[in-house]
Image (cartoon, rainbow, N blue to C red; front, side, top):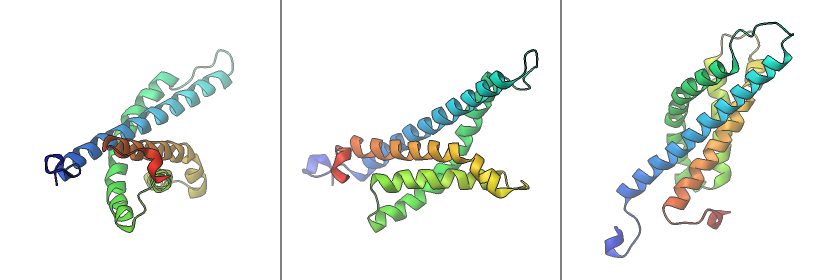
Length: 157
């Protein structure tokens, strides 16, 4: 049903708006991951002994993080969208589900991407910043998709 027929927004428009929401979530994930990587690089530079050279400067680390986060984010979106469709089918389309999905999937992806590690638990723990980044991205995606179709975010809280 279209708005011209006196009803809700059409599925075609809704799908486009969801793509914009996914893009907002992707940008949030890229920004938070890059910011964390840059701050971590600055911390390493501050801890380095005077006169010691840092192997990869924080700016270069942040640049590499932005590029890899873009690719990883697209893969994570491809994983999360079918899961979210199932969540919506089950009626679990509220913000805690979006934040939880964003919190769980990125560290699992991080673990699988870094599996040849000798200590998988340590690798999973090192993926915690990506879990936080994913949770923020999931929340942003949910918020944007809810607001853009004319519903208030607090209607489901």
